[in-house]
Image 1 (cartoon, protein in one colour):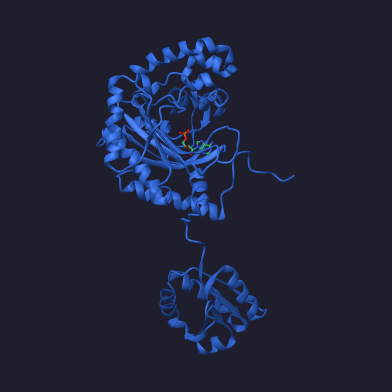
Image 2 (spheres, rainbow, N blue to C red):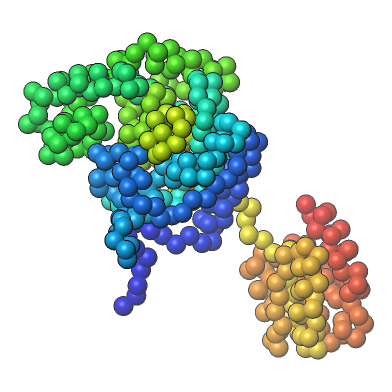
Length: 422
Ligand code: AMP
């Protein structure tokens, strides 16, 4: 029986992979201009890292982590998200001793045990940034604007930016108490998971896939309406800075992010061209996290974009990022020219051309057909007569014209010819 890739994972190759690689390269180039440096953390972490950061009552930790014991019995997890590992590295390597804030970017696979569907896999890829050791509404706006301009540079400028605030350790506990009181009379109408959440983390009820559309859940008091004065002012300043940078956004008081570590600024990018899974990215501020993981009381803010959903959004809009695969030159060697094939191919490749070719005892026509299928622009023909004269015949596949060129002038001829073609 044929063995398949695990459910919710996929092989990336061909045009899809080229698009993903192009996205990563564009992202690296983009964040470099904002002074970010790349960081690569392990794909495996101790599960405890996510329990302590993402939160023990979140869906990610309760249901979606791939965990397993190592041979020594410690529980490892395939990382479900990128922020906690980056913060762990910041603490472990005392990166905070450097000039602050520290600006880090990452790209790589994440794993969540979710029910696979369009735009939702068990292995997916994220592009993300984290700014550590800095705070203030201006910084938040800068990070959000960085993300938004990246999307715009891809042609996804119509993706909707939703902004909210999830409060702070002053106003959130007060709100949670209100929320618990509000839900208590509705206890029996909640799903079994949410009945548990009512005690441990009533905020989760608001984004429960089963309960969130029930009327009494929709009408529940909103965190955004219970913000303390400091949080409200902070949020308003973020909004002012975004406006001054010309970044369009809407305030979404319903926005609750599925990770516990966020404080104040929270945001999401929503792509209306996608189906049910329409969030292409999201992030927020996480001021307690560095200290929680054993570091100094430094603030942080970041976001992550989902590569697979970006790819879907680009395809929905007919946007192509990666140049189509192309071959500049095809070497068709026949008869006594067969021995010239490999030296010619390497000569051309060393000169920078994308070159492929075959030697064939069959008709030249067979070789020309292969060149055509590869999309080559020029065919270099070399047979007995050409070898005898130290020449090759060059044929432009688009125009069909053919001429003789001395072998030692071939590279110069191709440079001129391909440049003319554009
Ligand atoms: P989150 O860490 O949940 O805020 O996710 C950030 C972004 O990662 C989302 O907006 C999605 O684009 C992407 N993402 C999260 N989970 C998945 C998944 N299971 N499959 C594909 N993309 C995902």
